[in-house]
Image 1: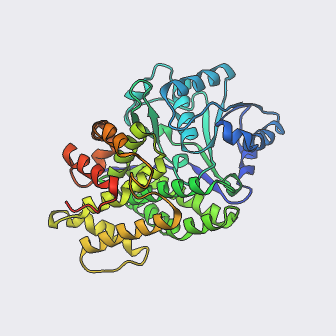
Image 2: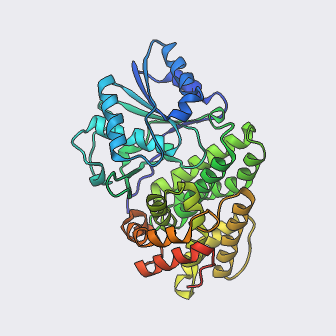
Image 3: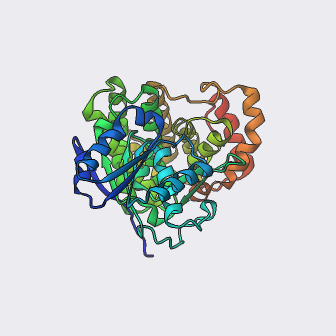
Length: 393
């Protein structure tokens, strides 16, 4: 079977931002949000470009969990400006906004919800895309994926297309120094979830496997260190690299059950994406590895577990130890391990449960999960997740 592995050109390390001096063009449209813009990070990008006689515009209308309407507003602004480079400066929501707006700028006839991996979009006829992440988690700077929210239902829908792979990813640790502790933890769990799910997805391959293993090892080593000292450039750089590696992995092999559960939690209960998928991850490991019929899946988790020093002979037992190790990491960094711990009231959970089940069953990541699952099992997992009960089925 023929397969492809898509990645952008990646520049990383201190002073990586200077790579902007090498790109060729005349007009750059910078997509960001108001928080990042207020920190002066976009001005640093602008100054490099304007010193080279570029025209540059800043649009700071990106918001968390972007809606289709937000993307359309960005695309209209890009069209009015007439960019030949779109530069995303921000976290995953900013980068997803830039990617989706890029599609509509080049192809206004496209309906985002109908976008498929097989569409020939003809991107880059007008502009190229550069991404400068300000969080170490989503890995969106290295993927061909976008996650957008429907305006009417609030449901998140994820889609991929090879042409959505950015042309350039700039990993500059100065852009993530001082990221608040909670966001550092949540985005770090997002990277960890990408690494794990990229390794067990039914579309896994040798290239994604290598990226996953290194990303997993780096997250366990460097995420706690980055929380100990928010200004430490080394740990920030290592987490940026880990998140990008994890993005390269799941961006080419796809995510699985934890993302289906997490996307739906965010759609219905408005929980942070990284916190949501991180919370779901150990429950999905326990579900996927249970029983003799799922031993091959458990063996894959065992290979991941070895990367962090967990040994044992029985794959299911080692897999369960791996889930425990992830929970221990979450305790260390402060990521909630249950809906209750996250402050979700039982009445709100119960009110949203059926919508979460419905949205999870519609989520494309579910098709990549190595163990089949139905709506009753998803409902049961969510109920176990409310109190943090270990999965036993």
